[in-house]
Amino acid sequence: MYHGDDSIDLPILGYAEIDDDHQLIWRVWQQVLGVADDGVVGALRRVVEVLAQHFMAEEALMKATGFPGADCHRAEHDRVLAVLERVIQATVAGNGPLGRYVLVREVPTWFARHVTGMDRLTVLWLRGRATATDHTLTAAA
Image (cartoon, rainbow, N blue to C red; front, side, top):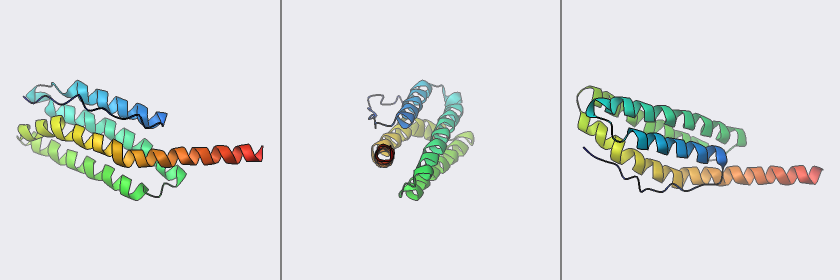
């Protein structure tokens, strides 16, 4: 049985809503790591559930602020959810080792890369928009 690398450190990006979600996703992933073979599908579904909820919230923030990279970022979300759904289907069909490998190795690697790349850029935009809004409100006062 594979055991994941829980030594990956997720950076704090400085946007509480997103940082809190990232920590929740990481905790869920750590909770499902040790599942028995017959629990891999349920574990993958739980990871997909928390990722999908986070993606919806993140995409709403991108839309509300006019983030210029939103289409690319959303496409990455859609791609990873589609891949995970295919892995779930393959695991249900009997390819348990694939499901476990993806759960233990690929999910954390992808997630850490996504957070330090796309999410970091998104948060820089969001924080810049908040600062611009704060300055506008201060100037108007």
